[in-house]
Structure formats: C-alpha cells, structure tokens
Length: 64
Image (cartoon, rainbow, N blue to C red; front, top):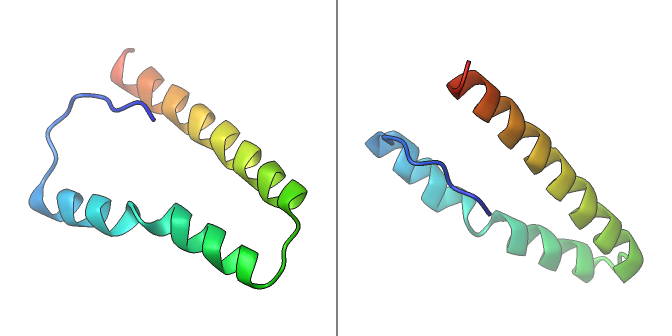
C-alpha cells in the first residue's frame, strides 16, 4: 500500500493502528462462515480498486 508523506495527529495515529488488523479480521470472519475463496478474491480485488480510486482522489486534492 502506498503512503503519502503527511503530518498525522495523535488521533490519526490511533485510528491507523486500529485499522491495521481490519483486513485480516474481515478475511478470518468471512472464512469462518465458509465464504468461497473465489468470492474473497473478488472482494479483495474490489477493495483494492476502491483504495486506488480513493488514493487518486486524495492525490488530486493535494496537487491542484
């Protein structure tokens, strides 16, 4: 994952730390309820696409 250099407040750092384990928690939960691997792969691809889109929008705002 790309990270843009920026100043992050203490609250932002706490949020980041809380968010780091989220993908693994989601994956483990979905596997526990027997979601098929192909569906997990589709979800991963979709989330990566959204992350790319959001990163591009953030970059656009930072570089007018």
